[in-house]
Structure formats: C-alpha cells, structure tokens
Length: 394
Image 1 (tube, rainbow, N blue to C red):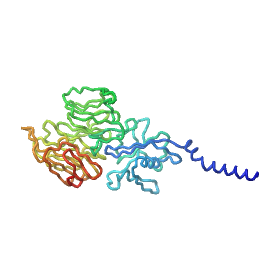
Image 2: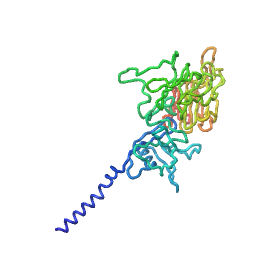
Image 3: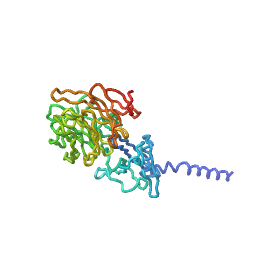
Image 4: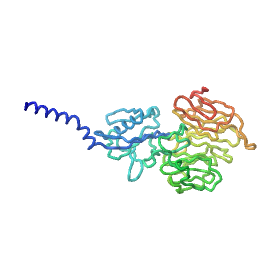
C-alpha cells in the first residue's frame, strides 16, 4: 500500500510538471508587442500579439499575419529569414522595392530602420515594429494608427478604413461641430487628409496644416489650389493652380520639389488628386487649351517623371486608382474656355502602372469626373458603369 501511495504521488508530480509549466512560463516570460503592416497604398493593419518563449520579430510578424488573415511568405537563409511577401504583395516580382522592418523609437517618436533581421531582433515588452515596402517609413504611427492620407483613403478609392477616420472633426453623437477654422476664402472643394496628428487642406488661399484640435501649425500661401492633397513619407503632395505638383515638408510646409503637370493650367491648374503607391505618384493632367490630357507617374522622393501617357481628353477631378499593375482614370472631355463646356471624347483609360502602356480605353456619352473603385474581384467601378479589368462591360 505504501508503495502504491509513493507511485501515485510521483505520478501526480509528473502530471503537474508536464501540465502547468507552459502557463507559468507565459506569466513570467510572455510579452505584448504591437505589429503594423503598411502596404504603402493607404491600407494598414495593426495587431497586438502575445509572445511566450519566442520573442523574435519574425514570430510577432507570423502571429500578426495570422490574426489579420494575411499570407506571410518567407525564405530562410544561413543568416536568417527574408520576408518576401505579405498579403499577396511580393517583392521578388518587382525588385525595385522590398519589405523593410522598422522599430518604433519611443524617445524620438519615429520609426527607426532595424539594424537586425527579423529572426535576430529580440523584442521587449511594449515594443512596436512595422513592415512597409522599400525604405519608405510608414505614415501610420502608434499615436495616429489609422491615417487618412489620400483621396478616399487608399489607392483603390474604396474609402475603407479599419477604425474611426483620423482626425475626428465632427461629433456625430451630438451632431455638433467640435471646432472650425476660417481659411478666409470663399470655397473649399478640397477634401481634408490627415496623418501624424495633422490635418491638411488646400484652397485658393494656400495649403493649411492644422492640429487635431484645429490649431494652425503652418500655412504655405505660395501654393494655391483647390483639390485633395495626398500624404507621403514625411511629405505632402498638392496640386497648384499654376500647373505644378508640389511636394512639401509635412513638418513645416517648405517646398521639397515641384514638377510641371500641365503647360496649359488656365485658372484651375492640377485638378486631379494625386495617388501614392509604394513610392510612386500618379496624377492626371487638365488641359485648359482644349487639347488632350495625360496621366503621369512620378518618383515620390524627387518628382522625376517615370512615365507619361496621353489621355483622349482632360483628366479633371478623377483621382487615379491603382490595383496591382494597373492604373485607371477617367476623362472629363475637351474643354472650351470660351463657353466653359466639355465636349467628347469622354471615357475611361487603363494603363500599365509599371511603364505607362495603354491597355484599353472605353468611351461613354458624358464626362467622367469620378475616381474609379476597384472591388478586388476583377471589376472596376466608375460613376457611369461597371467594367471588368480587361475592358468588358458588366
């Protein structure tokens, strides 16, 4: 009987040791970290993940991608892991960019490029890491996690967001205005954009940068326009009435570069809200003289024109939509400045986003001033009709 009791005690001890150490290890060794996946086109995904015995950045990334249902593609080498695809976006398909790892610096409140690979970087409690294409820092930050950086938020123009849009200007609960700011101009056709605790809007009085409580941070009166700007990495892209696209420092509003978009700006200038995708800027051209328009692709860093292709008529209002390797834009028509009227051709264009080659053009009976929306299911939608990506009327 005594031997049986000893055996029973030993058995219970073994069960205890094999059942509960993992739980105790989580209590002592587990940490919480935040992971940002920024696709460089306006779409961002945040996740808080709990790490137990493995505190590496790659483990945090794996858990974050699993939580967001994003496919993670990795290749292991002798020196560690290389992330070559997240959510179906693969860098080896286009070696002009790659997935970069960042670590949030709490002291400087900036993203620092990680000096260690994802399999070597050991995280600590409360750390925040991010993945983004190329060397462009994410515009999302912990204090402003869901920026609204361009027209309709992302390159697809679908107006989608994962949380409340930032910044909240109107209190919907009480149907009252939280604050207002007088720009001293008669109209405000531009939609505001916001990131990093800043709100940007432009009109005929200049470019205005406000804080989330409506305080003016800076104003650039030299650049006047009236169409929605876009926020890039540390910069703001805004079209001017003089026909140039300007890049401004987001901190102080100083000009970084400018590029001529139309030689015939008339009184409106650049009227197409720019779209930013992984370091490239797409913007349409309005032709006040009555001739055809154009679609431009520029380098976000320096304003160099990567490619340009003619459209059948002016691009006016329409913001380019980019999905995969295709970019879509609508045309308003040929402009007659004497009658202030538009005449055909009207239509929609699809270009190869990589080199500007024209893929198809679809004519319609009236002006197309809207931006396209890509439904991620093989269709693109404009205000006039639904088309397949391969130019088939639906």
